Image 1 (cartoon, helix red, strand yellow):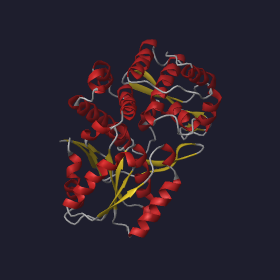
Image 2 (cartoon, rainbow, N blue to C red):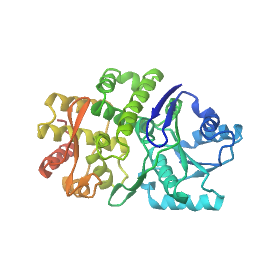
Image 3 (cartoon, rainbow, N blue to C red):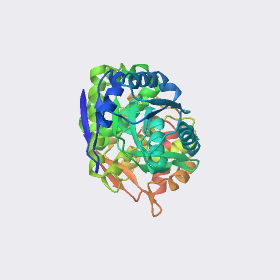
Image 4 (cartoon, rainbow, N blue to C red):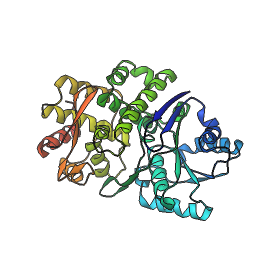
Length: 365
């Protein structure tokens, strides 16, 4: 088992990574919550139902009282209505301030579960059990929670760190191909923003990763978690360094909102967003042609990405409502080189529009 400590105050927590870990989830929760663990409520979605049953069985064997609450999946289900519905069910089930939520699923499940935990009875504990690659390398770590509005993604949310993250690479064997590839785009992001070794590895080991080679995946997941851990420890509330995690997300979130959260997986939107960021960085003189080309080729290598049918004007309108817009200026994370990025607030709208138009045409930098 690999353990990675997330050093946040006042209560650091661990990401535990091991194959077969979910079958021992009950034991892991007892290690954190003690011999008399509180009542647990497992929040899950249909695609993760198989793994929720595994977690439930483990809790039962560990004699941990629990109930399973199902919610709809997908970005359109990541809404206040889902949070309200779950909260009402918790009340009816007798959940109190000592109860623990356990989110078993992908990024949507984790975001909704974490947000609900942050506001139910003014805050209760939660545990993340990510069952998608995207959630394992990014979404389940760092305490960002939230839901979408029609105007944009994650506009309502909070910072609420989990008590524990249980990551089992074994679950990826059942992940649909499109969802698996979507997670690889988030992993690529880690390589661009902080650790060039991840990017190099993904360029070099494409076939092993696409074949879901256990050793390759274990190395990739742990490496990405270490990137996220270092960034979150340095800037938990996203006042500075943590903003680099938004590489590819500025245009990516706008694309998700502009397409009604129907057409793109989150990771796919980030993939397009990284190509746009490479294009913008090159146009702004921040990213070399060589680095921009590597980013675009790496994203393409883990595609295909869905075609885009959205206007540059609509994307610019969505950017204006993005939470990364400060004093009317949308802040972009741009690559100085592979492994290092900077935050740039003064990107002209025409540069963004040109990059989005190139995405629509299926072009690369």
